[in-house]
Image (cartoon, rainbow, N blue to C red):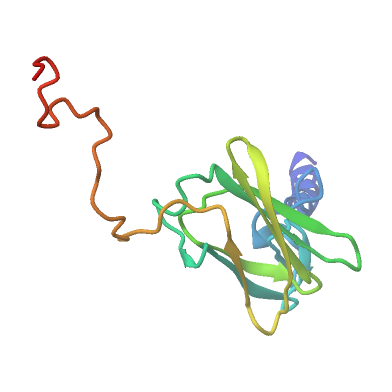
Length: 172
């Protein structure tokens, strides 16, 4: 009889492990039912209903890198389905990479937003439509440091001039 109880409990245990986590979210495909995948918004969706999307950005026309991203603390990225109101927000997103890629974004997501956080506050907001057919959304952010490899001219020492060729201590 004890053996039967263990065998009877096994299907229940297996069924529980196939369900999404306690909050209804998933992190891995195996947490979803057959024929579904775990999308980047942590929801189980039908296989084939997701797409790859890259959100890319430049800094005042220059590539995002250590110099151009210097004034930026981080970015906040939002993707949303404007029809259903469903959204996913990611923060902090490092500026220096210049891109953020979703491997399995749900098909209804049609708008992306990128916010720039600098000096501990939100200084820029950008929004653009996205399309599953293009696979890329690009933004040009205005909050940028000096572009890399730009010759700013000679460095001028701002220290006071000690000897200007005039002897101020001798009167004619």
